[in-house]
Length: 431
Image (tube, rainbow, N blue to C red; front, side, top):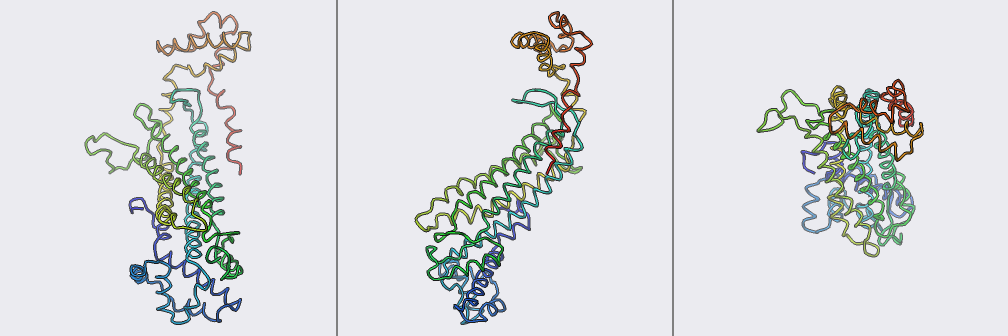
């Protein structure tokens, strides 16, 4: 992932220094286990830990010659440690190191992403609580429907990211496995106790059965989860983009004093952060299909998944980390315009009270079909003539013959639409 969309902490996870350090940690842990089982001499692991140094440039130089990354790594360690390094990697295969390391990197990245989601949840909750009763129009198909509150709108995103957090926790758990089972996964040349020891030391679970690789359905779940989170980010970003349109302007991204909106038009204030989030979501989701296709490897292993994961591992996690933090800043600093929300509520002259009139007409004896026809004709009149829906209703003899005017007025009450807000908030914020 390019630096423009990268944050340092998660980027470091995918750098060669961290990768080779994890490889060394796996090899040392395996050596410690083998010492306990008396498979290799005592003291090997301690010597490797004290003498081995990660020299990224050296490893890459060796790999350019031998065309094998794990062999290059082991050769580099051998040069530092000496003859005792021959006991490293005993009975193991490259995938034992590569797959276990990749899962650790995904776990490390996932834990950062969980932190990001927690920060975002806090910001959404603050906006939801602050605007619990801030009236705005609810829209379906982009068209005015019935009143809601801006807090309720925010609460839908809060709950969605609560679900995303649970999905990610499950995906991290699914990916947190270790395989030290040797060629084709039979443990022919390495004791299963080595795997158990390494898994415990690295805070992983053992892979119950690996072929020569950890099954890629685990990774497919992880990247699919990242894709779902990205889609949630896009849904939020799209909402902000729509609400910031000039004709709507119910919310607006924070705009700095020295910020410029357009190279040509000085008046512009564009929702560039939300638009950027929409693009990043597309990028993150692009890792999902390759991850799903990686599940179908040949027999006990092939490496068709390798090049894919070397790209999507860092790219998807780094991009999502950046996106979650950007979204958090957008929500935390969001400009909210309640006056414009009221202005937009009044655009249609009260026709959003149509359902309440419909229901009341059925209560006083009209059939639903007849009620619908009466209300719709009055609503369409208000829409076409830019007239008051209430006045149209109050002038309709069919209606006032059945519903007294004083009762009719009470049907045009915003509090009717907010009376259950507390119940929804209690349900949504319940942990």
